[in-house]
Length: 134
Ligand code: GTP
Ligand code: MG
Image (cartoon, helix red, strand yellow):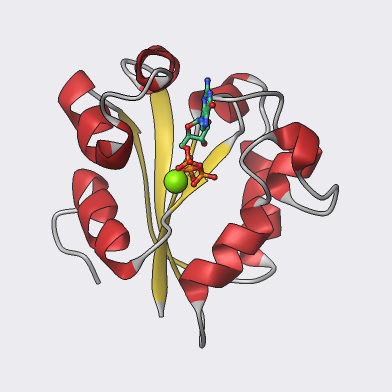
């Protein structure tokens, strides 16, 4: 199955992309990859479920008008669950040290990567970066 990942601006500015991609490639095949600077409406679409929450403005400031990298990943099983486990807990301080956020995340919202949490989210989020989804 497939999942979508965004490498967040904090990881790019701290030159962590290569190390994060190595961890991803150890477990997944990269099907699509592109860099993209997200607009405000695109961040609203990416994080539609969080609009109106107290921390939404912080998400917007952290991700809009900054370079990101979008990926579609494939593996033979539950790619969505497996990628969420590899990402680690939302707050890097709670994340297992073997996970991407445990190794590289600093805080919220600068926790280095986003990963889709459902098939519907994968479709909505991947469409922000890619015209024809796999
Ligand atoms: P994503 O893969 O980025 O969607 O993270 P997640 O699924 O682990 O967490 P969630 O969807 O609940 O939150 C989305 C993003 O909002 C997180 O990655 C955090 O960066 C940020 N976030 C979540 N909770 C808080 C919070 O309480 N305060 C702040 N400032 N940011 C938060
Ligand atoms: Mg989420």
